[in-house]
Image (cartoon, rainbow, N blue to C red; front, side, top):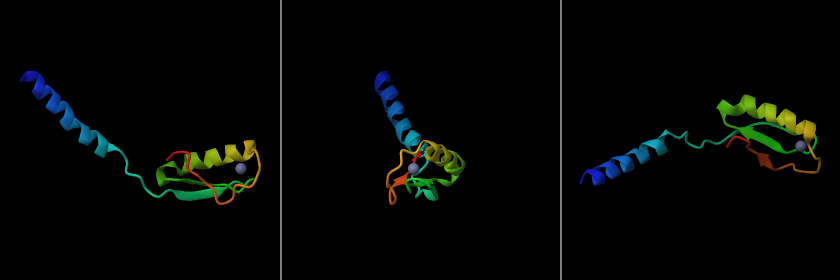
Length: 75
Ligand SMILES: [Zn+2]
């Protein structure tokens, strides 16, 4: 009886943990690579980080034609 109760309590915690997650939102486009043209997008909270990632990407960009692709490094 006690073990059943403990298991039920544990299970009742699960939905709460799931709802704590930030819901997926449509990421905002923050810019495109000047070399290959790939677009970077991130949620509003991550825009500063994504901008840094875009700058880093431009420095190490392998080149090519990736216009139309969208990179979301934090989604
Ligand atoms: Zn690039």
